[in-house]
Length: 610
Image 1 (cartoon, rainbow, N blue to C red):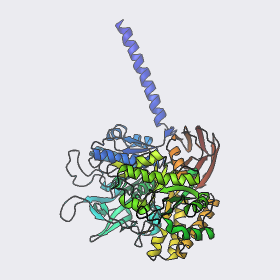
Image 2 (cartoon, helix red, strand yellow; image 1 turned 180 degrees about the horizontal axis):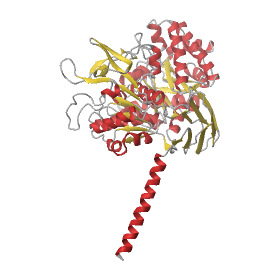
Image 3 (cartoon, rainbow, N blue to C red; image 1 turned 120 degrees about the horizontal axis):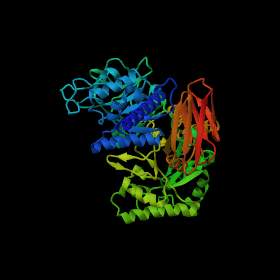
Protein backbone atom coordinates (compact mmCIF):
# COMPACT_ATOMS: atom_id res chain seq x y z
CA UNK A 1 0.00 0.00 0.00
CA UNK A 2 2.83 2.34 0.93
CA UNK A 3 4.51 1.59 -2.41
CA UNK A 4 1.27 2.49 -4.31
CA UNK A 5 1.02 5.79 -2.50
CA UNK A 6 4.64 6.51 -3.34
CA UNK A 7 3.98 5.68 -7.01
CA UNK A 8 0.93 7.99 -7.12
CA UNK A 9 2.96 10.76 -5.52
CA UNK A 10 5.75 10.38 -8.05
CA UNK A 11 3.25 10.47 -10.92
CA UNK A 12 1.61 13.59 -9.48
CA UNK A 13 5.00 15.29 -9.15
CA UNK A 14 5.90 14.31 -12.71
CA UNK A 15 2.62 15.69 -14.07
CA UNK A 16 3.05 18.91 -12.10
CA UNK A 17 6.59 19.27 -13.41
CA UNK A 18 5.44 18.76 -17.00
CA UNK A 19 2.64 21.31 -16.59
CA UNK A 20 5.02 23.81 -15.00
CA UNK A 21 7.60 23.26 -17.71
CA UNK A 22 4.92 23.72 -20.36
CA UNK A 23 3.77 26.95 -18.78
CA UNK A 24 7.32 28.27 -18.59
CA UNK A 25 7.96 27.21 -22.19
CA UNK A 26 4.87 29.03 -23.39
CA UNK A 27 5.77 32.11 -21.37
CA UNK A 28 9.40 32.29 -22.40
CA UNK A 29 9.26 30.70 -25.86
CA UNK A 30 10.24 32.56 -29.00
CA UNK A 31 6.58 33.27 -29.72
CA UNK A 32 5.83 36.52 -27.90
CA UNK A 33 2.98 35.97 -25.40
CA UNK A 34 -0.13 38.09 -25.24
CA UNK A 35 0.28 40.67 -22.52
CA UNK A 36 -1.57 43.57 -20.96
CA UNK A 37 0.13 46.87 -21.79
CA UNK A 38 0.44 49.09 -18.74
CA UNK A 39 2.69 51.26 -16.57
CA UNK A 40 4.29 50.15 -13.33
CA UNK A 41 4.36 52.83 -10.61
CA UNK A 42 6.98 51.91 -8.05
CA UNK A 43 5.13 53.06 -4.95
CA UNK A 44 3.90 49.92 -3.24
CA UNK A 45 5.61 50.80 0.03
CA UNK A 46 4.11 54.28 0.50
CA UNK A 47 3.56 54.51 4.25
CA UNK A 48 3.48 58.09 5.53
CA UNK A 49 0.59 60.44 4.85
CA UNK A 50 2.91 62.49 2.64
CA UNK A 51 3.82 59.46 0.56
CA UNK A 52 0.18 58.40 0.24
CA UNK A 53 -0.68 61.91 -0.97
CA UNK A 54 2.15 61.80 -3.53
CA UNK A 55 0.85 58.47 -4.84
CA UNK A 56 -2.72 59.85 -4.96
CA UNK A 57 -1.50 62.74 -7.15
CA UNK A 58 0.24 60.41 -9.61
CA UNK A 59 -2.80 58.16 -9.80
CA UNK A 60 -5.14 61.11 -10.34
CA UNK A 61 -3.07 62.47 -13.22
CA UNK A 62 -2.70 59.07 -14.87
CA UNK A 63 -6.46 58.50 -14.58
CA UNK A 64 -7.30 61.94 -15.96
CA UNK A 65 -4.89 61.36 -18.86
CA UNK A 66 -6.28 57.88 -19.60
CA UNK A 67 -3.20 55.73 -18.93
CA UNK A 68 -3.40 52.16 -17.63
CA UNK A 69 -1.15 51.46 -14.65
CA UNK A 70 -0.56 49.28 -11.63
CA UNK A 71 1.11 50.25 -8.37
CA UNK A 72 3.95 47.82 -7.75
CA UNK A 73 6.31 47.22 -4.84
CA UNK A 74 10.08 46.56 -4.67
CA UNK A 75 9.18 42.98 -3.67
CA UNK A 76 7.55 42.45 -7.08
CA UNK A 77 10.70 43.64 -8.82
CA UNK A 78 12.73 41.22 -6.75
CA UNK A 79 10.43 38.27 -7.44
CA UNK A 80 10.31 38.68 -11.23
CA UNK A 81 13.64 40.33 -11.95
CA UNK A 82 14.38 42.74 -14.80
CA UNK A 83 13.23 40.43 -17.60
CA UNK A 84 10.03 39.43 -15.82
CA UNK A 85 9.17 43.04 -14.99
CA UNK A 86 9.75 44.05 -18.62
CA UNK A 87 7.33 41.33 -19.74
CA UNK A 88 4.70 42.76 -17.37
CA UNK A 89 5.25 46.53 -17.52
CA UNK A 90 6.04 48.54 -20.60
CA UNK A 91 7.56 51.34 -18.54
CA UNK A 92 8.29 52.31 -14.94
CA UNK A 93 7.53 55.54 -13.08
CA UNK A 94 9.62 56.11 -9.94
CA UNK A 95 7.94 58.91 -7.90
CA UNK A 96 9.81 61.16 -5.49
CA UNK A 97 10.15 60.60 -1.74
CA UNK A 98 8.55 57.13 -1.80
CA UNK A 99 11.65 55.71 -3.51
CA UNK A 100 14.37 57.70 -1.77
CA UNK A 101 15.15 54.62 0.36
CA UNK A 102 16.08 51.70 -1.88
CA UNK A 103 18.01 48.47 -1.45
CA UNK A 104 20.97 47.90 -3.83
CA UNK A 105 19.30 44.76 -5.21
CA UNK A 106 16.28 46.77 -6.37
CA UNK A 107 18.49 49.43 -7.94
CA UNK A 108 20.34 46.72 -9.89
CA UNK A 109 17.08 45.28 -11.22
CA UNK A 110 15.99 48.74 -12.38
CA UNK A 111 19.36 49.28 -14.08
CA UNK A 112 19.05 45.97 -15.92
CA UNK A 113 15.43 46.76 -16.84
CA UNK A 114 16.61 49.88 -18.69
CA UNK A 115 20.10 48.92 -19.92
CA UNK A 116 19.59 45.25 -20.79
CA UNK A 117 15.85 44.81 -21.32
CA UNK A 118 15.24 48.09 -23.20
CA UNK A 119 12.73 49.47 -20.73
CA UNK A 120 12.06 53.15 -20.19
CA UNK A 121 11.84 54.69 -16.73
CA UNK A 122 11.03 58.12 -15.31
CA UNK A 123 13.02 58.96 -12.17
CA UNK A 124 11.79 61.87 -10.07
CA UNK A 125 14.01 63.96 -7.76
CA UNK A 126 15.62 61.58 -5.25
CA UNK A 127 15.50 57.85 -6.11
CA UNK A 128 17.88 55.54 -4.21
CA UNK A 129 19.54 58.34 -2.24
CA UNK A 130 19.22 56.84 1.25
CA UNK A 131 19.56 53.38 2.74
CA UNK A 132 16.57 51.48 4.07
CA UNK A 133 17.90 52.44 7.50
CA UNK A 134 17.55 56.14 6.67
CA UNK A 135 21.25 56.96 6.17
CA UNK A 136 22.39 58.95 3.10
CA UNK A 137 24.00 56.84 0.38
CA UNK A 138 27.60 57.84 -0.45
CA UNK A 139 26.25 58.38 -3.98
CA UNK A 140 22.76 57.73 -5.38
CA UNK A 141 22.59 54.13 -6.53
CA UNK A 142 21.01 55.09 -9.86
CA UNK A 143 23.29 58.04 -10.72
CA UNK A 144 25.32 56.08 -13.31
CA UNK A 145 22.18 54.79 -15.02
CA UNK A 146 20.59 58.25 -15.19
CA UNK A 147 23.84 59.97 -16.15
CA UNK A 148 23.46 62.66 -13.51
CA UNK A 149 25.10 63.07 -10.11
CA UNK A 150 21.98 64.27 -8.34
CA UNK A 151 21.07 65.17 -4.75
CA UNK A 152 24.41 66.86 -4.12
CA UNK A 153 24.80 68.88 -0.90
CA UNK A 154 24.56 72.66 -0.96
CA UNK A 155 27.61 74.88 -0.44
CA UNK A 156 27.02 74.74 3.32
CA UNK A 157 27.14 70.94 3.25
CA UNK A 158 23.41 70.56 3.89
CA UNK A 159 21.51 68.05 1.75
CA UNK A 160 18.40 69.98 0.75
CA UNK A 161 16.66 71.40 -2.29
CA UNK A 162 17.08 75.03 -3.25
CA UNK A 163 14.65 77.39 -5.05
CA UNK A 164 15.66 77.77 -8.69
CA UNK A 165 14.13 78.27 -12.12
CA UNK A 166 13.13 75.92 -14.93
CA UNK A 167 14.57 76.97 -18.30
CA UNK A 168 14.26 75.40 -21.72
CA UNK A 169 16.78 76.13 -24.50
CA UNK A 170 13.98 77.48 -26.71
CA UNK A 171 10.19 77.74 -26.93
CA UNK A 172 9.91 74.69 -29.21
CA UNK A 173 11.64 72.46 -26.66
CA UNK A 174 9.28 73.72 -23.97
CA UNK A 175 6.32 72.89 -26.18
CA UNK A 176 7.74 69.40 -26.80
CA UNK A 177 7.61 68.93 -23.04
CA UNK A 178 3.96 69.93 -22.86
CA UNK A 179 4.44 73.50 -21.63
CA UNK A 180 1.43 75.41 -22.92
CA UNK A 181 2.23 78.45 -25.11
CA UNK A 182 2.22 81.51 -22.87
CA UNK A 183 3.77 79.75 -19.87
CA UNK A 184 7.35 80.48 -20.92
CA UNK A 185 8.75 83.99 -20.56
CA UNK A 186 11.08 85.69 -23.05
CA UNK A 187 14.05 83.80 -21.52
CA UNK A 188 12.17 80.48 -21.98
CA UNK A 189 11.74 80.04 -18.24
CA UNK A 190 8.46 78.64 -16.90
CA UNK A 191 6.31 81.53 -15.64
CA UNK A 192 2.68 82.19 -14.77
CA UNK A 193 -0.12 84.74 -14.41
CA UNK A 194 0.80 87.83 -12.30
CA UNK A 195 3.97 86.23 -10.85
CA UNK A 196 6.22 86.05 -13.90
CA UNK A 197 9.15 83.63 -13.64
CA UNK A 198 8.47 80.88 -11.10
CA UNK A 199 10.86 79.21 -8.71
CA UNK A 200 10.89 75.44 -8.33
CA UNK A 201 12.69 73.16 -5.90
CA UNK A 202 15.77 71.42 -7.27
CA UNK A 203 18.66 69.48 -5.82
CA UNK A 204 22.14 70.50 -6.84
CA UNK A 205 23.15 68.16 -9.64
CA UNK A 206 25.88 67.70 -12.25
CA UNK A 207 25.44 66.09 -15.64
CA UNK A 208 27.81 63.16 -16.25
CA UNK A 209 26.47 61.48 -19.36
CA UNK A 210 22.87 62.47 -20.05
CA UNK A 211 21.37 64.91 -22.52
CA UNK A 212 20.14 67.99 -20.64
CA UNK A 213 16.73 69.05 -21.95
CA UNK A 214 15.85 71.67 -19.30
CA UNK A 215 17.99 73.33 -16.67
CA UNK A 216 18.43 75.98 -14.01
CA UNK A 217 21.16 78.62 -14.12
CA UNK A 218 23.20 78.96 -10.94
CA UNK A 219 26.48 80.61 -9.95
CA UNK A 220 28.26 77.28 -10.34
CA UNK A 221 26.80 76.62 -13.80
CA UNK A 222 23.76 74.88 -15.24
CA UNK A 223 21.85 72.50 -12.99
CA UNK A 224 20.02 69.71 -14.87
CA UNK A 225 16.23 69.84 -14.39
CA UNK A 226 15.13 67.35 -17.08
CA UNK A 227 17.54 64.89 -18.68
CA UNK A 228 17.45 61.79 -20.84
CA UNK A 229 19.94 58.98 -21.31
CA UNK A 230 19.40 56.46 -24.09
CA UNK A 231 20.89 52.98 -24.32
CA UNK A 232 21.69 50.69 -27.25
CA UNK A 233 19.05 48.25 -25.95
CA UNK A 234 16.38 50.87 -26.70
CA UNK A 235 16.02 51.70 -23.02
CA UNK A 236 15.79 55.28 -21.77
CA UNK A 237 16.28 56.84 -18.35
CA UNK A 238 14.54 60.20 -17.95
CA UNK A 239 15.23 62.26 -14.82
CA UNK A 240 13.12 65.14 -13.44
CA UNK A 241 14.89 67.19 -10.76
CA UNK A 242 11.71 68.49 -9.12
CA UNK A 243 9.13 67.16 -6.63
CA UNK A 244 6.38 66.83 -9.24
CA UNK A 245 3.48 65.94 -6.95
CA UNK A 246 4.18 68.94 -4.75
CA UNK A 247 3.21 71.33 -7.53
CA UNK A 248 -0.11 69.65 -8.19
CA UNK A 249 -0.79 69.98 -4.46
CA UNK A 250 0.18 73.65 -4.70
CA UNK A 251 -2.15 74.30 -7.63
CA UNK A 252 0.39 74.08 -10.46
CA UNK A 253 -1.00 71.02 -12.24
CA UNK A 254 0.84 71.68 -15.51
CA UNK A 255 4.24 70.82 -13.99
CA UNK A 256 3.62 67.14 -13.13
CA UNK A 257 1.09 66.63 -15.94
CA UNK A 258 3.42 67.87 -18.68
CA UNK A 259 6.37 65.77 -17.45
CA UNK A 260 4.29 62.60 -17.06
CA UNK A 261 2.47 63.03 -20.39
CA UNK A 262 5.64 63.77 -22.32
CA UNK A 263 7.52 60.83 -20.87
CA UNK A 264 4.66 58.36 -21.34
CA UNK A 265 3.70 59.51 -24.85
CA UNK A 266 7.02 60.47 -26.44
CA UNK A 267 9.41 58.09 -24.72
CA UNK A 268 7.43 55.09 -23.49
CA UNK A 269 4.88 55.26 -26.38
CA UNK A 270 2.15 54.17 -23.98
CA UNK A 271 -1.39 53.74 -25.32
CA UNK A 272 -4.04 55.92 -23.72
CA UNK A 273 -7.61 57.12 -23.82
CA UNK A 274 -7.39 60.65 -25.21
CA UNK A 275 -9.11 63.03 -22.78
CA UNK A 276 -10.86 65.20 -25.35
CA UNK A 277 -13.96 64.52 -27.50
CA UNK A 278 -13.13 62.48 -30.62
CA UNK A 279 -9.45 62.93 -29.76
CA UNK A 280 -9.50 66.48 -31.14
CA UNK A 281 -8.01 69.51 -29.45
CA UNK A 282 -10.48 71.62 -27.48
CA UNK A 283 -10.70 75.37 -26.88
CA UNK A 284 -12.94 77.26 -24.47
CA UNK A 285 -13.38 81.03 -24.84
CA UNK A 286 -14.71 82.32 -21.52
CA UNK A 287 -16.22 85.83 -21.57
CA UNK A 288 -16.84 87.55 -18.23
CA UNK A 289 -19.52 90.26 -18.08
CA UNK A 290 -19.14 91.80 -14.63
CA UNK A 291 -21.40 94.86 -14.77
CA UNK A 292 -23.28 97.40 -16.88
CA UNK A 293 -19.97 98.95 -17.89
CA UNK A 294 -19.74 96.48 -20.80
CA UNK A 295 -22.94 97.34 -22.72
CA UNK A 296 -21.14 99.52 -25.26
CA UNK A 297 -18.38 96.94 -25.80
CA UNK A 298 -20.92 94.14 -26.25
CA UNK A 299 -22.79 96.21 -28.82
CA UNK A 300 -19.59 96.86 -30.79
CA UNK A 301 -18.62 93.17 -30.66
CA UNK A 302 -22.06 92.18 -31.96
CA UNK A 303 -21.95 94.75 -34.74
CA UNK A 304 -18.55 93.45 -35.82
CA UNK A 305 -19.80 89.86 -35.91
CA UNK A 306 -17.52 88.59 -33.16
CA UNK A 307 -20.25 86.38 -31.73
CA UNK A 308 -20.51 83.29 -33.90
CA UNK A 309 -22.80 80.32 -33.29
CA UNK A 310 -20.16 78.05 -34.88
CA UNK A 311 -17.76 79.07 -32.08
CA UNK A 312 -19.94 79.00 -28.96
CA UNK A 313 -18.45 80.80 -25.94
CA UNK A 314 -18.87 80.29 -22.21
CA UNK A 315 -20.51 83.63 -21.34
CA UNK A 316 -20.60 84.29 -17.60
CA UNK A 317 -22.62 87.19 -16.20
CA UNK A 318 -23.05 88.92 -12.86
CA UNK A 319 -26.79 89.45 -13.17
CA UNK A 320 -27.74 92.00 -10.51
CA UNK A 321 -28.34 95.75 -10.78
CA UNK A 322 -25.34 96.58 -8.57
CA UNK A 323 -21.54 96.17 -8.70
CA UNK A 324 -19.49 97.73 -5.88
CA UNK A 325 -22.16 97.84 -3.21
CA UNK A 326 -25.81 96.94 -2.99
CA UNK A 327 -27.87 99.81 -4.34
CA UNK A 328 -25.25 101.49 -6.57
CA UNK A 329 -27.18 100.63 -9.81
CA UNK A 330 -23.95 99.96 -11.73
CA UNK A 331 -24.68 96.33 -12.54
CA UNK A 332 -25.76 94.40 -15.64
CA UNK A 333 -29.36 94.10 -14.35
CA UNK A 334 -30.28 91.00 -16.36
CA UNK A 335 -33.99 91.21 -15.53
CA UNK A 336 -34.43 94.82 -16.70
CA UNK A 337 -36.35 95.23 -19.96
CA UNK A 338 -34.28 98.33 -20.75
CA UNK A 339 -30.79 97.19 -19.68
CA UNK A 340 -29.58 93.61 -19.42
CA UNK A 341 -32.51 91.54 -20.67
CA UNK A 342 -32.34 92.35 -24.41
CA UNK A 343 -28.55 91.88 -24.41
CA UNK A 344 -28.86 88.57 -22.57
CA UNK A 345 -31.58 87.41 -24.97
CA UNK A 346 -29.18 88.01 -27.85
CA UNK A 347 -26.14 86.44 -26.15
CA UNK A 348 -27.85 83.16 -25.30
CA UNK A 349 -27.69 82.17 -28.97
CA UNK A 350 -23.89 82.32 -28.98
CA UNK A 351 -22.93 79.95 -26.22
CA UNK A 352 -23.64 78.78 -22.70
CA UNK A 353 -24.78 81.43 -20.21
CA UNK A 354 -23.11 80.91 -16.85
CA UNK A 355 -23.08 82.74 -13.52
CA UNK A 356 -20.25 85.09 -12.59
CA UNK A 357 -20.38 85.13 -8.81
CA UNK A 358 -23.34 86.39 -6.86
CA UNK A 359 -25.45 89.39 -7.92
CA UNK A 360 -22.94 92.25 -7.38
CA UNK A 361 -19.50 91.48 -8.83
CA UNK A 362 -17.06 93.48 -6.71
CA UNK A 363 -19.17 93.34 -3.55
CA UNK A 364 -19.29 89.55 -3.81
CA UNK A 365 -15.57 89.15 -4.61
CA UNK A 366 -14.34 91.38 -1.80
CA UNK A 367 -16.76 90.21 0.89
CA UNK A 368 -17.11 86.51 0.19
CA UNK A 369 -15.12 85.38 3.24
CA UNK A 370 -16.90 87.82 5.55
CA UNK A 371 -20.55 87.36 4.59
CA UNK A 372 -22.78 85.01 6.60
CA UNK A 373 -23.32 81.77 4.69
CA UNK A 374 -27.04 82.51 4.38
CA UNK A 375 -26.39 85.90 2.75
CA UNK A 376 -23.77 84.46 0.43
CA UNK A 377 -26.14 81.72 -0.70
CA UNK A 378 -28.89 84.28 -1.21
CA UNK A 379 -26.71 86.39 -3.54
CA UNK A 380 -25.69 83.33 -5.54
CA UNK A 381 -29.30 82.14 -5.79
CA UNK A 382 -30.40 85.57 -7.00
CA UNK A 383 -27.76 85.49 -9.73
CA UNK A 384 -28.66 82.00 -10.95
CA UNK A 385 -32.42 82.63 -10.79
CA UNK A 386 -32.20 85.89 -12.73
CA UNK A 387 -30.20 84.33 -15.57
CA UNK A 388 -32.45 81.26 -15.73
CA UNK A 389 -35.63 83.34 -15.75
CA UNK A 390 -34.47 85.34 -18.78
CA UNK A 391 -32.83 82.55 -20.81
CA UNK A 392 -35.21 79.75 -19.85
CA UNK A 393 -32.18 77.47 -19.43
CA UNK A 394 -30.54 76.01 -16.34
CA UNK A 395 -27.23 77.61 -15.39
CA UNK A 396 -24.51 74.92 -15.27
CA UNK A 397 -21.31 77.00 -15.47
CA UNK A 398 -19.67 79.36 -13.00
CA UNK A 399 -16.75 81.75 -12.66
CA UNK A 400 -15.58 83.42 -9.48
CA UNK A 401 -15.26 87.23 -9.44
CA UNK A 402 -11.63 88.12 -8.80
CA UNK A 403 -10.80 84.42 -8.89
CA UNK A 404 -12.04 84.14 -5.29
CA UNK A 405 -13.06 80.47 -5.26
CA UNK A 406 -12.46 78.66 -1.95
CA UNK A 407 -13.07 74.91 -2.02
CA UNK A 408 -15.76 75.10 0.65
CA UNK A 409 -17.95 76.98 -1.85
CA UNK A 410 -18.11 73.95 -4.16
CA UNK A 411 -20.87 72.31 -2.14
CA UNK A 412 -23.16 75.23 -3.00
CA UNK A 413 -22.27 75.01 -6.69
CA UNK A 414 -22.92 71.26 -6.68
CA UNK A 415 -26.31 71.88 -5.12
CA UNK A 416 -27.10 74.30 -7.97
CA UNK A 417 -26.12 71.73 -10.62
CA UNK A 418 -22.89 73.36 -11.84
CA UNK A 419 -20.78 71.08 -14.06
CA UNK A 420 -17.77 73.28 -14.80
CA UNK A 421 -16.07 76.39 -13.45
CA UNK A 422 -13.33 78.87 -14.31
CA UNK A 423 -10.23 78.40 -12.18
CA UNK A 424 -7.24 80.68 -11.63
CA UNK A 425 -5.07 77.89 -10.22
CA UNK A 426 -3.25 75.24 -12.32
CA UNK A 427 -2.77 77.87 -15.02
CA UNK A 428 -2.32 76.75 -18.60
CA UNK A 429 -3.28 73.15 -17.85
CA UNK A 430 -6.11 70.78 -18.73
CA UNK A 431 -9.52 70.61 -17.03
CA UNK A 432 -8.92 68.89 -13.72
CA UNK A 433 -10.03 68.30 -10.14
CA UNK A 434 -7.85 70.76 -8.20
CA UNK A 435 -5.86 70.15 -5.05
CA UNK A 436 -4.57 72.72 -2.60
CA UNK A 437 -2.33 71.55 0.23
CA UNK A 438 -4.26 68.65 1.80
CA UNK A 439 -7.61 69.68 0.33
CA UNK A 440 -9.25 68.15 -2.74
CA UNK A 441 -11.94 70.07 -4.63
CA UNK A 442 -14.31 67.22 -5.60
CA UNK A 443 -15.01 64.75 -8.40
CA UNK A 444 -18.37 66.00 -9.60
CA UNK A 445 -17.33 69.31 -11.21
CA UNK A 446 -14.45 70.10 -13.57
CA UNK A 447 -12.22 73.12 -13.05
CA UNK A 448 -11.06 74.84 -16.25
CA UNK A 449 -7.75 76.65 -15.61
CA UNK A 450 -7.13 79.94 -17.37
CA UNK A 451 -4.33 80.00 -19.91
CA UNK A 452 -2.19 83.13 -19.46
CA UNK A 453 0.19 84.84 -21.81
CA UNK A 454 3.12 85.17 -19.43
CA UNK A 455 2.03 87.56 -16.65
CA UNK A 456 -1.27 88.48 -18.30
CA UNK A 457 -4.50 86.51 -18.65
CA UNK A 458 -7.25 88.71 -20.12
CA UNK A 459 -6.87 90.67 -23.33
CA UNK A 460 -7.35 94.00 -21.58
CA UNK A 461 -4.45 93.13 -19.26
CA UNK A 462 -2.30 92.48 -22.32
CA UNK A 463 -3.45 95.80 -23.77
CA UNK A 464 -2.59 97.67 -20.57
CA UNK A 465 0.72 95.80 -20.38
CA UNK A 466 1.64 97.02 -23.89
CA UNK A 467 2.03 93.53 -25.30
CA UNK A 468 2.45 93.99 -29.08
CA UNK A 469 -0.62 92.99 -31.11
CA UNK A 470 1.38 90.62 -33.30
CA UNK A 471 2.62 88.81 -30.18
CA UNK A 472 -0.92 88.22 -29.00
CA UNK A 473 -2.04 86.97 -32.42
CA UNK A 474 0.94 84.62 -32.56
CA UNK A 475 0.16 83.33 -29.07
CA UNK A 476 -3.45 82.66 -30.12
CA UNK A 477 -2.25 80.72 -33.17
CA UNK A 478 0.34 78.79 -31.18
CA UNK A 479 -2.18 77.92 -28.47
CA UNK A 480 -4.76 76.56 -30.92
CA UNK A 481 -2.04 74.60 -32.77
CA UNK A 482 -0.79 73.21 -29.45
CA UNK A 483 -4.28 72.09 -28.42
CA UNK A 484 -4.71 70.35 -31.78
CA UNK A 485 -1.31 68.66 -31.88
CA UNK A 486 -1.33 67.56 -28.22
CA UNK A 487 -5.08 66.74 -28.37
CA UNK A 488 -5.77 68.60 -25.14
CA UNK A 489 -8.35 71.13 -23.91
CA UNK A 490 -7.34 74.67 -23.00
CA UNK A 491 -9.30 77.76 -21.90
CA UNK A 492 -8.69 81.48 -22.37
CA UNK A 493 -10.74 84.23 -20.78
CA UNK A 494 -11.31 87.93 -21.16
CA UNK A 495 -13.95 90.67 -20.78
CA UNK A 496 -15.90 92.47 -23.51
CA UNK A 497 -13.96 95.36 -25.03
CA UNK A 498 -14.39 97.86 -27.83
CA UNK A 499 -10.68 98.67 -28.00
CA UNK A 500 -9.10 97.82 -31.34
CA UNK A 501 -6.39 95.75 -29.63
CA UNK A 502 -8.94 93.38 -28.06
CA UNK A 503 -11.28 93.28 -31.05
CA UNK A 504 -8.43 92.31 -33.37
CA UNK A 505 -7.18 89.67 -30.94
CA UNK A 506 -10.63 88.05 -30.74
CA UNK A 507 -10.89 88.14 -34.51
CA UNK A 508 -7.49 86.47 -34.82
CA UNK A 509 -8.60 83.75 -32.41
CA UNK A 510 -11.83 83.15 -34.32
CA UNK A 511 -10.20 83.05 -37.75
CA UNK A 512 -7.67 80.47 -36.62
CA UNK A 513 -10.19 78.46 -34.57
CA UNK A 514 -12.68 78.29 -37.45
CA UNK A 515 -10.01 77.03 -39.83
CA UNK A 516 -8.83 74.34 -37.41
CA UNK A 517 -12.38 73.36 -36.52
CA UNK A 518 -13.27 72.96 -40.20
CA UNK A 519 -10.22 70.74 -40.61
CA UNK A 520 -11.33 68.53 -37.70
CA UNK A 521 -8.27 69.28 -35.57
CA UNK A 522 -9.82 71.50 -32.88
CA UNK A 523 -13.32 72.17 -31.63
CA UNK A 524 -14.52 75.26 -29.77
CA UNK A 525 -17.24 74.64 -27.19
CA UNK A 526 -18.46 75.90 -23.82
CA UNK A 527 -16.74 74.39 -20.80
CA UNK A 528 -19.87 72.49 -19.73
CA UNK A 529 -19.89 70.52 -23.02
CA UNK A 530 -16.32 69.41 -22.41
CA UNK A 531 -17.19 68.69 -18.77
CA UNK A 532 -20.05 66.40 -19.87
CA UNK A 533 -17.60 64.49 -22.04
CA UNK A 534 -14.94 64.28 -19.32
CA UNK A 535 -17.42 63.01 -16.74
CA UNK A 536 -18.52 60.28 -19.15
CA UNK A 537 -14.93 59.59 -20.22
CA UNK A 538 -13.93 59.03 -16.59
CA UNK A 539 -16.40 56.11 -16.39
CA UNK A 540 -14.68 54.24 -19.21
CA UNK A 541 -13.07 50.96 -18.22
CA UNK A 542 -10.61 49.56 -20.71
CA UNK A 543 -7.76 47.15 -21.29
CA UNK A 544 -5.27 46.77 -24.10
CA UNK A 545 -3.30 43.61 -24.89
CA UNK A 546 -0.49 43.11 -27.35
CA UNK A 547 0.57 40.02 -29.26
CA UNK A 548 3.53 40.70 -31.51
CA UNK A 549 2.57 43.79 -33.53
CA UNK A 550 -1.17 43.26 -33.06
CA UNK A 551 -3.39 44.68 -30.31
CA UNK A 552 -6.81 43.98 -28.88
CA UNK A 553 -8.70 46.72 -27.00
CA UNK A 554 -11.72 46.15 -24.76
CA UNK A 555 -13.83 49.19 -23.84
CA UNK A 556 -16.84 49.53 -21.56
CA UNK A 557 -18.85 52.55 -20.43
CA UNK A 558 -22.38 52.46 -18.95
CA UNK A 559 -23.14 55.86 -20.52
CA UNK A 560 -21.88 54.95 -23.98
CA UNK A 561 -18.58 55.06 -25.83
CA UNK A 562 -19.34 57.67 -28.51
CA UNK A 563 -16.37 59.98 -29.19
CA UNK A 564 -14.05 57.98 -26.91
CA UNK A 565 -10.64 57.79 -28.59
CA UNK A 566 -7.88 55.24 -28.07
CA UNK A 567 -4.34 56.22 -29.09
CA UNK A 568 -1.93 53.36 -29.93
CA UNK A 569 1.61 53.77 -31.25
CA UNK A 570 2.03 51.60 -34.34
CA UNK A 571 5.08 53.25 -35.90
CA UNK A 572 5.37 55.60 -38.84
CA UNK A 573 4.65 54.15 -42.25
CA UNK A 574 2.98 51.04 -40.86
CA UNK A 575 -0.24 49.64 -42.25
CA UNK A 576 -2.99 48.47 -39.90
CA UNK A 577 -6.60 47.38 -40.04
CA UNK A 578 -9.07 47.94 -37.21
CA UNK A 579 -12.07 45.62 -36.80
CA UNK A 580 -14.69 44.83 -34.20
CA UNK A 581 -16.85 47.95 -34.00
CA UNK A 582 -18.07 51.19 -35.52
CA UNK A 583 -14.95 53.35 -35.33
CA UNK A 584 -13.00 55.83 -37.42
CA UNK A 585 -9.21 55.98 -37.50
CA UNK A 586 -6.54 58.60 -38.08
CA UNK A 587 -2.77 58.01 -38.21
CA UNK A 588 -0.39 60.81 -37.26
CA UNK A 589 3.32 60.70 -36.36
CA UNK A 590 3.19 56.93 -35.89
CA UNK A 591 0.11 57.06 -33.62
CA UNK A 592 -3.15 55.40 -34.55
CA UNK A 593 -6.17 57.26 -33.12
CA UNK A 594 -9.31 55.14 -33.02
CA UNK A 595 -12.53 57.02 -32.23
CA UNK A 596 -15.73 55.13 -31.44
CA UNK A 597 -18.52 56.39 -33.70
CA UNK A 598 -21.46 54.58 -32.09
CA UNK A 599 -22.73 54.88 -28.53
CA UNK A 600 -22.38 51.20 -27.68
CA UNK A 601 -21.69 50.43 -24.04
CA UNK A 602 -19.16 47.70 -24.83
CA UNK A 603 -16.76 47.20 -27.69
CA UNK A 604 -13.79 44.99 -28.52
CA UNK A 605 -11.47 46.28 -31.21
CA UNK A 606 -8.72 44.35 -32.98
CA UNK A 607 -5.73 46.20 -34.44
CA UNK A 608 -3.94 43.97 -36.91
CA UNK A 609 -0.63 44.93 -38.46
CA UNK A 610 -0.53 44.18 -42.19
